[in-house]
Length: 75
Ligand SMILES: [Zn+2]
Image 1: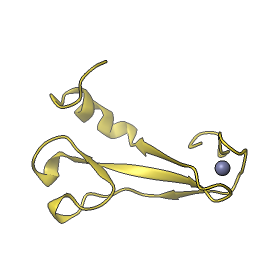
Image 2 (image 1 turned 120 degrees about the horizontal axis):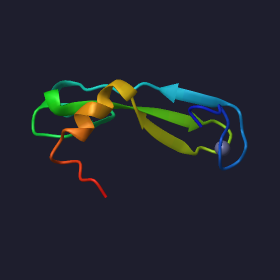
Image 3 (image 1 turned 180 degrees about the vertical axis):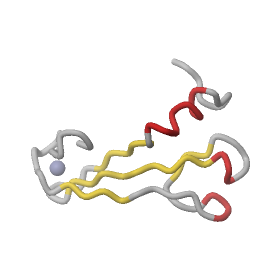
């Protein structure tokens, strides 16, 4: 959906994006990889305004932090 600008569920093209953020005490749409807010990685949410389907993506720049985190297990 992020790349195609098209909803994979309904085919809709009215896609909106809400940028994730890491606020005080970890508020905001983010992934906490540790106990402090410094371990927070913002998650951007893509929303289909035709059916309501949502998809979340991390920024590519943050993926190395996920790889080096003990909390993120390789499956
Ligand atoms: Zn949709």
